[in-house]
Image 1 (tube, rainbow, N blue to C red):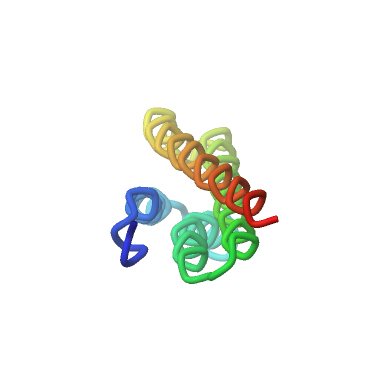
Image 2: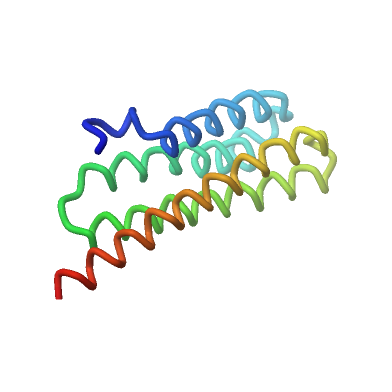
Length: 124
């Protein structure tokens, strides 16, 4: 059992995604500051932030809700990366590297969600 969310590998990996997105988006044109740059950074940061918030919640239902938000933010980040590549902003190799990490995070979040669903069922 983890004492703090910072000990969780899924949170650590999500934070790494946020850092990678910050670096890749810092190369975007200035005209994207209030568009793609802002949106992809918010989506990426939201993954680790929602995992942390889920950790702080006390009931399986509340925890599950924030893991759902984290999962949705991972998919949003993935979509924005694909878009950024399609319009010529992001290198395909970098996008594929980050998307592999996002897929791993989504997989880990899904495992946590199944565990929480089992806890909800056992409490009934």
